[in-house]
Length: 73
Image 1: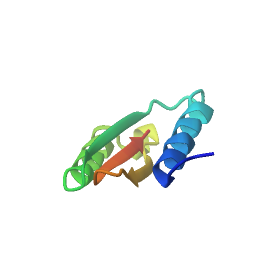
Image 2 (image 1 turned 135 degrees about the horizontal axis):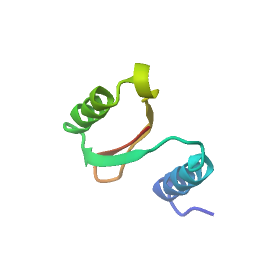
Image 3 (image 1 turned 90 degrees about the vertical axis):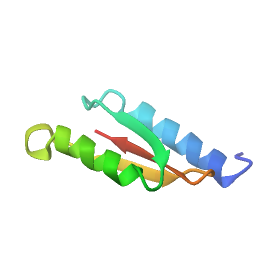
């Protein structure tokens, strides 16, 4: 049983990455301060355009310290 909502979120994120690990997508995980996270996500999507690579932000969440974790493929 998770001891906090953050523990539950961490377990769910780890499980999601394991389940999707063999689906053929290369994933990148970014953890950054809130003000930098959108710029990083945009740079990733610009570098790997969806039309050619099916790129997307798969998930994002706010961590306890105020940072944002982004999972992109």
